[in-house]
Amino acid sequence: MTEAERRRAFNEIYAEYDRRLFAYCLYVLGDRDKAKDVFQNIFIKVYKSIHALRDTEKLAHWLFRIARNECLNAMKSIQRKENRYVRIDKSENSPSLAAEGSAEYTDEIEHVRWGLQQLPPEYREALVLAEFEGYSLKEIAELTGASLSNVKVRIFRAKKKLHTILQPILNDYD
Picture 1: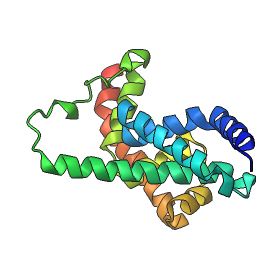
Picture 2: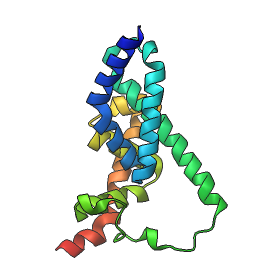
Picture 3: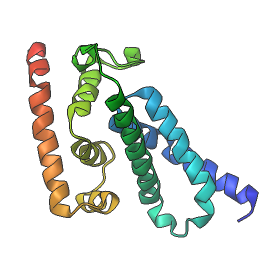
Picture 4: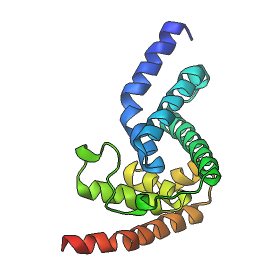
């Protein structure tokens, strides 16, 4: 693959998948700045390894596998940092806290994003892949390395827990 072919392929991939991958990162990580950093890392890896992609039929799977790994690495890094410091301000647990840059989002979307962040990472990931990205249960199982039945359970529990988390907020809209 020549450098020109590599750039052209990269540009096509970026144009087709940039929004989906950024949305995935944002929903999984829950922080716009962290999502931007991870998103950038994803496409750096894509550019460096695009020559190794053999089966373009599995392009989306390949991209989301990279995105998933980068998000997991970011979450591990965040957890290590959080474990070093004791939080004094508990206000970030409040559903009314507006996420950074949230002026462009409706209140409902902010609440859903906040609710997703309250879910365990494996539940959040399965739910985001199924509901926001449209992956089948089988594809999610392949992508995450979990069994099909485990993916079903994660999504079921994620929906149930998200409903419980958001119920008080939903009651306020009545």
